[in-house]
Length: 526
Image (cartoon, rainbow, N blue to C red):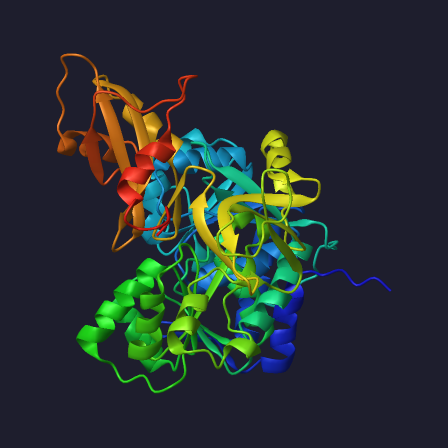
């Protein structure tokens, strides 16, 4: 008998087993799983009334709120595809994504509405905008609209596990984002694997620090809901507020980027809140040094778990959780292991291969590319078969991340094959930033690379060649870029040079540029 793996199963389980338990704590608002499910039914009826059908795209531009969480399940019940939008983009980025995704309806938080206001008239195929908060011109107010629909059990659209659940946009290495198509099956099996490795249970309280637009919050709305965990919302990444909520709500687990954790550590040292419960903090985005792991586990006394993945694989495929034979190692050795990407999770095969496709020796020295064959693999890039075929070859997804493997089989990332800058957990396309620089009439050539940064791990740095007779200051170039790019994509510093290093064929050698900034680090990621 075939029972399709559909994500709505997770909320069904929570309602059946934990119906009267707090599901969501959103500032002063608390909803049980039964109440959350009733709102989800109202949302599904509302979408149906708007003409949303199976396969339609429904976009969400929202921080971590009740409305964002319930959106996943309300969208899935009508067979539509959840399309979360990064809250840190420029209006032109939103216009591109909303057009490219063929989004039919957009839900937008009241505070974020100004980000899309100017482009909405340019989106004739976007049929309805609904605001989480006060109504805007021509838009519906979410709560008033929701109240007009029944909260009775909803007659769901029939789905197969191969149907698409999520359309997620990632910057990659080109200026325009690519849309990653993830099926119900991919998200479902990823949830089952991840909940095991993170030891998620009904005793957990999750604080949603990681934005839910980031690969569905690493799938957290699925596996925490499935286990009946209480989920605490966080609208803004404020380290002091994070600590307050951890203490107030007895939070047991958080997901975040290393840069955010670093800010939390600083706030903890200043505030010294009384946090008596055991806390697990799950990190991904850039590999922290062992000293950082030590600080988390010895000062905060939180358990540190690093994971690794990417949008195209739902996203997690490895974990640094110590295995039984590593528990008795000296503290420094344990911290060193936890600072690595780790070993493969259940449901994923992960290899590091050389240019011939052969696995590199496990000596901690031989460098190869991480490839994976996993149940969480994307169906492909939306409207982009060329990029799909380039990324998935012979059934294996090529991550573009370069790594070594130690004698215990633990993977450690040492460089990036693609010129993607990961700053504070955000992907930045160096090509996109270079495109903005080239728009300046005084700039002849430009190359953008990642440089180490204590706060953000790494940030974009531009090396610029000016046209003859032209003069520009660092401040002028940065200000110019700020007008064209999201702030996190803007170069944080500029180097002026007479000539960029190039190959014999004229290709700019970014690796040569990067080395000058990373030579004292021992590797070229931070």
